[in-house]
Amino acid sequence: MAWNPERYLQFSRERELPCSDLISRLRFESFENITDLGCGPGNSTALLRAAFPKAQITGVDASPEMLGAARQRLASATFLQGNIQSWTPDKAVDLMFSNAALQWVDNHSVLVPRLFATVRSGGYLAVQMPYRDELSPISRVLRAVENHDPWAAYFRKPVRTWSVHEPAAYYNWLCGGSHRIDIWLADYYHPLPDARHVIDWYRGTSLQPYMAALPSEQLRGEVLQFCYDAIRDMYPLQMDGKIMFSIRRLFIVAQR
Image (cartoon, rainbow, N blue to C red; front, side):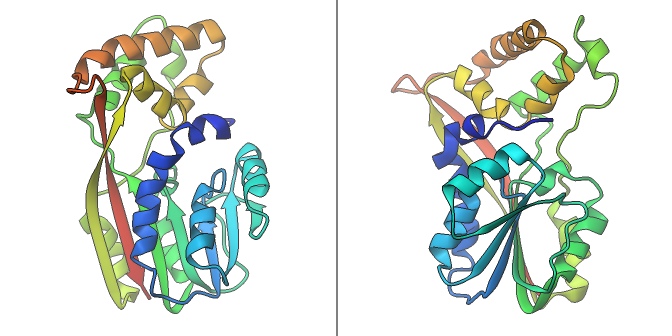
């Protein structure tokens, strides 16, 4: 599945807000080496560089397209291709950081403790993920797409979706080896010009696996139009003519 850096960065300011908030919880710490796991096009890595200018930062991502964009964006970091499921740094890190990436990986009960184990004593694991809400407009629409003819045949194999658990699960997976754990949820509200922009937002994330499963541009266009028709009435116009798009995010900061 090929990721599109330009599409992802269409909403770069909005996507960077939770990343900045996660970094703000760490601003008074001193880090010599940082891993940005699932760094994408390097927007999170650039924020880490601004916050920790003296640190050695390594960005890791599985997508060659995203890594290409990251290398062009930030020459002062090292970018390597690797999978979140299996990536292990050469030595213990001061900060294992992951912004909006772990939700694409299964088996968090194994993954999260394994990542925490790569952190040195006194160091941190810091994670932010969109918190999946089965009642959200996009979740309801994607379930409809999966069961709607003629597209249902292309989704018999389960589509790659988010893997995010309740906050208490992450606490229990981390508490045995941690000095301190902070976990919180936050809702982000983004004014957008119209509901078409909501579809554009998800084309850079949740809709990408659906687009990849379809064999033609015609079918992709049909699905996108179906999603827009289904979602537009779920976002009422505000007084300035825009719509208010919201997304809930889960944050985890654990000190070893």
